[in-house]
Length: 236
Image (cartoon, rainbow, N blue to C red; front, side, top):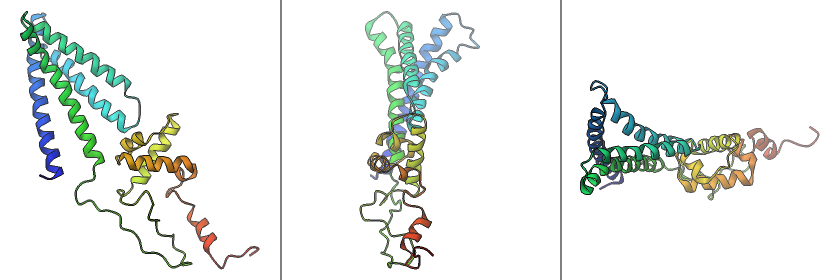
């Protein structure tokens, strides 16, 4: 089985389990709302507010990680509403330990399966699709031809997806502008590249900050031509 099919099958399984857990928790919370004298026409909203907030908060954690911003608030929100959902499910259960444990498992499963789905989305984002084009080494250019030199064999961009450097550079500049300390993992999540590639570019930008502010991370084109043009002489 290929990697793509593994992702699809596992993602489908997680979605089915999450839907089942949500349905079970929804029924318990809906009955609790009715028992608490919530109007029947509005009682269906109560489980949506409780369990829906858990799902939205966990998805917000994923979005915040991609944006390389703080995840403290959505994690806190997810934790509070998860605890509330478990407590309300237990309150609805009969006064027996086994029954209370049975009702508590549905909201717990909802939280865990949603978190699994978040992880799978993150893996799919940073894993290159099968058959994706890989940058080939360029042939050496004749000296003095006026063209930019070919990438060195040790260039960190070899094999990286198109536009990866510009996305990492934009994430690096955004984090610096926000007063944050860039990390390889944070740049990788924000740019959708591998963590190893993010760490290599972070080391490059840290060692030479001018590379993080130029489109290609090299000296400007006109400067390179001036440096290599044999017809350019001092005083002309």
